[in-house]
Picture 1 (tube, helix red, strand yellow):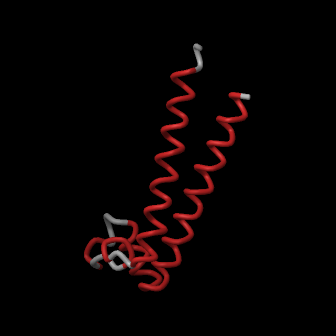
Picture 2 (cartoon, rainbow, N blue to C red):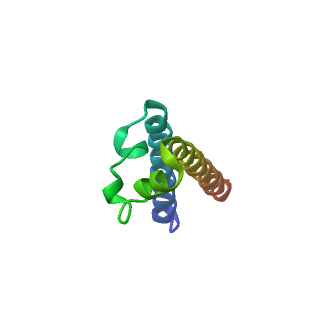
Length: 87
């Protein structure tokens, strides 16, 4: 029982990481402007804008898909690790 808070925290973190990854995938699919086509003036403070400035709109879409897929994969691996601890 001493591990329960740590396990719950790990589950919440992995769920949050997966949710952010899914939102990025969905946002890239729907071409949300703030995600794949942000204003160029923000390139020094917003990473998506810097990616767009370097690689163009298509590059920003591809990078967003890749980042979303990586976050979902990390969330799945984290959940798998937590489940291994429980068994």
